[in-house]
Amino acid sequence: MGRIPWLRANQMLWPWIRARVRLIGSAALGGGVLAVLGVIGLLLATPYDLAFVSTQAFSLGALCFGFGLLGWSGSVLAGSSVENAQRYLDTGMNWSEADSRRAMARIGGFGFGGMVGVIVVSSLWA
Image (cartoon, rainbow, N blue to C red; front, top):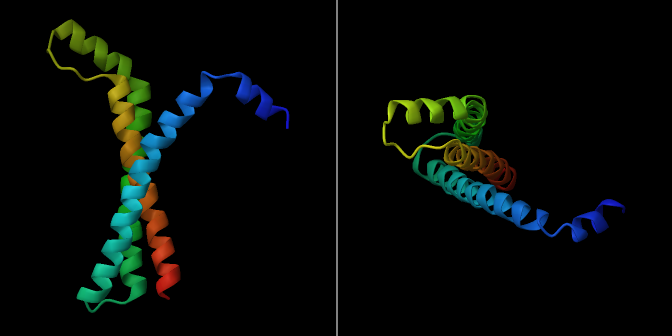
């Protein structure tokens, strides 16, 4: 109960949370919808059973999630070094650590949504 008044008092925290939830949530929603449509489409169009299709679709979602997580951590660890190297070499590229982290968070959210979508459609289809 003590944390809620603190969050209400800190008005700067809510826009930060809202932006992150919107970024990852929209990607997760897109991944979930694509996974549901993909599993249903593959079940109707191919001779494979639910176990095979859901395993393959879940694996693709996990691959996206893992790539996003690994890329995000790589951006955090090496982002400032890459920015400094680009500034030193005068490459003229607009790559930044923040943009890379945002892109990787979106990819990870997409993969997470895909995994959840496969779980939901597999549970409802069975």
